Length: 206
Picture (cartoon, rainbow, N blue to C red):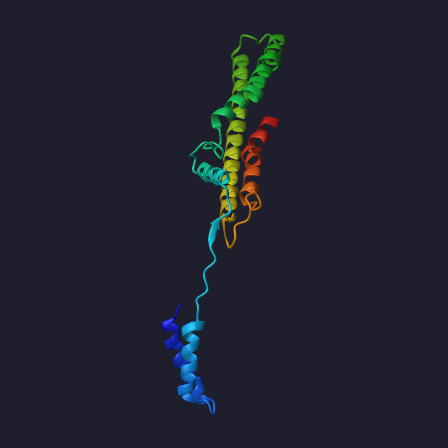
């Protein structure tokens, strides 16, 4: 294909170079430069851009991104399940604490005042009330602290997911590789479960 713009540019530059070289001259330089520009100045083609993910990987990748916004089939992946945590807290921490209060703390207080013939006094009632408040306040404090930590961990997991997405290249230039040799999405998907479940496992251990 004839490159007319390249020919004109080559003629001008060839003439200027030819005039500076003895024995060549601007006319000859212009002719040579024009020929070179017309037939030798081809533009390089840009490398072709292609997707490095196969259709299934692309669908999972899209769901992964949607989960960070609380959308799609994995909408709860990076959300703190406060209802689930409260149920586990009641069963594993709350109930044992109340049972200990009823079976050990109350008999200990009433036995102490009974031995001093003060069982029916206001002192006995105040002691029981104070002990009950202490148990409840300790449980409420522990529950609030654990919920806050769980929410913070969920936010950190979400931030890690965002950083992972921003650092993943889902396209390349040149000749496509066979699917399965790109690695980016596979690495992300393999880390989903540990990131989303790490905070919950810690509280179950408690």
